[in-house]
Amino acid sequence: MQMRTVIPIFISLIMLNGCGGESAKIQESVTYAQPLHSSLTQSQSGTQPQGEKWSVSGQVFDASGQPIAQAKIYVQLGEHNYYAHSQADGRYTLYLPREYDYPDHIAGTVWMEGYQPEILLLSHQNQHLYIDQHSHLVQLKPLTEAHVVFQQGLHLIHLGDDSLVKNPETRIQTAPQGLVWSDGFQYTQALQKQYNQLCIQLYGKGIQSQYANQDKISISRKNDLRLSITQLLSDSPSSGAYSANEHCFPLRHFQVNDHIQVQIKSHTLDTDQDNFEMLNIVGVLRKI
Image (tube, rainbow, N blue to C red):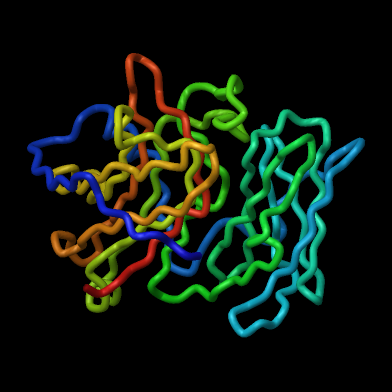
């Protein structure tokens, strides 16, 4: 997926004598992903809508232009996950319920084992559901040893404390799932020899970090916050659309076999949490 360059507002290297209580609780729930691996499989169950339906169609290709069969296309609305599979020619039709209080902008994922996930963009305007012109033809690029697919990062994630149903532009697709998302991977000797930078790529909606909320993304060593690097998340468009973000972190302070934890956190503002959604969170290791 194409990412725009992001200039971080600040990067802090924090040396602490101990771990705080809240951070320790967060770390206990971390699941460590491995490169080229994800728990999301083609057999994962989903829901088919009942009653009147919208249908959206497209086609999935690989980097050489060949159709991909059995790619999974899914969109989460509320508590339900609606899905379809591509056929031998790469074509698919996804059905979504007409009776739903849609936000203006909706996102889903196109995924196939061994490939990088790609976003599916939809919009709801004038009481009709449309597929974005760039999502009609989806090209999936192969995963490499430099990719880290986070197990829970392919699903739609809503961080915050409410659904923001008042404004169609900021309305959220699904219920809040907590205030912190976290996952990680092992920085093996083979990876350390080749890569010294980790870039986290994601699609986000409703992120408002640069002015007041200061939602953050950070990497740290597992169970050891003496080494922590933090950046502000990049803002999403004010229109409520999804945008691609990339945040890069140096790895020179990490050692062989360190478990590197990635954490994204909704910030509290006047006792209220910022609410935003994100999906397709992937790590890319690079040499700089």
